[in-house]
Image (cartoon, rainbow, N blue to C red; front, side, top):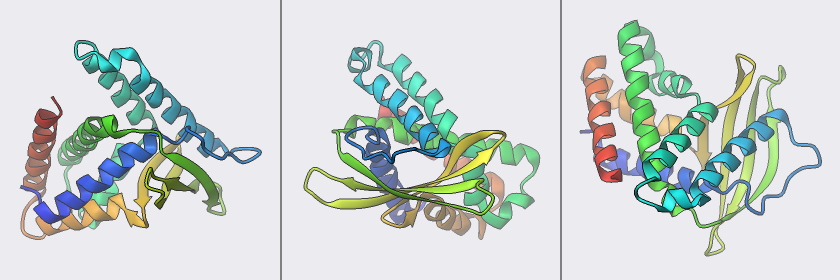
Length: 216
């Protein structure tokens, strides 16, 4: 099994991410001219939100199809290969091409299943954009927001995005300055320090299956 303590922390981050990502278009404060990265993020989130609001999502008979649509939209905005490379860290280069593919697929399944199982927690929190920081080449940006929860608590959330093959994709999320990638990297490095890539892949696959079973 994956580390229980770290796993709970990662799941908590994903729960927050699910709720926060889904509400970016609700009462958000937009700049006069949004950047291409921010436009990409908001278009994807709007499409996800539309799926959740669709009556078909509330119907247990048609919800699986809606979840498939959400999964496709999430794959469009999140670069799961970048997530996999960054969470595996320096050990990524020691993976064979087959191990890299299987790890990427397993990790994507884990993130997607956990994300989709949590979207029911959306309840219209308010989001305000507070700025964007870009590198000199304008190929990487960090979209910064402040989310106001129902109890009035303000939570900083940042989305790290990169321009890849002509499209803006998200490769990390920071919730209260805690990186989703670093959180998983710590957990995975603990496993890789005592085991081989195949052991990590097997554990992530098992965790993804567990998440899928719990989502039904």
